[in-house]
Length: 311
Image 1 (cartoon, rainbow, N blue to C red):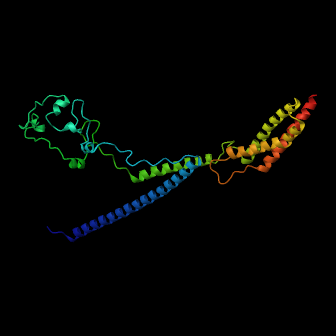
Image 2 (cartoon, one colour):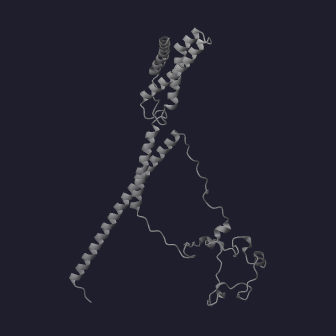
Image 3 (cartoon, one colour):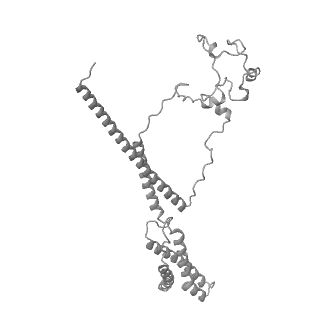
């Protein structure tokens, strides 16, 4: 059979086109793999940065890192004999265990298990014939036991819930691009939650929605009001003769304002400090000093004017 020049040229063109298509497919696959590797590296960097940020947040709120898991903590504690056995469904209530020391065939094994001697057909040597003794299975030899080393190398059979011994179907291979897209979305969600956590961590426990200046004014004014209540108690004690005038004047002019100022200063340092903040938050000591040393004497003067007005 001879091949004409036109047919040869057509076959050459077809081979060239197939070769070109193969090269294009290989180039596209190579570019796809490069893109996947770049996406994986980028996600790895993002996850590393997120892990470091989570460690910083945990240290800021007083949560230590969990201790590393002990090696082999999630593994089973079975004996080597149990690891060498063939995996499969557990034996029934009436079947004898094959993993214990008494599983070997012997004269006392049947009596120890509570069952009588086997009445099935045998091989003639006093041993059961296995599959050869099954009716309709003539010519089939008994199953030979695997040594321990070969049993470890034997591949386990996946048992499906529908029936024993039926291999389970393998899961379909996942698309790397889809998995990377899901991972990217989860990383974006983690970034969003981390940003919200940082915003909450930058707010103090005391009056979190207020500005630092308004918070300081409120705290110092509250401490001065508490000192005003103590001042009224001292005035009442002075009226019944428990406190003299000099002690009352000293407490009103210096003692109670100083107590109110240091109380407000400590409150702002304890509950007015955010969990995560760069540096020390402002506590406005001059403003607090002015508020406390003005409000307490002014409250005493207002009390005197009120008492004289009622008289």
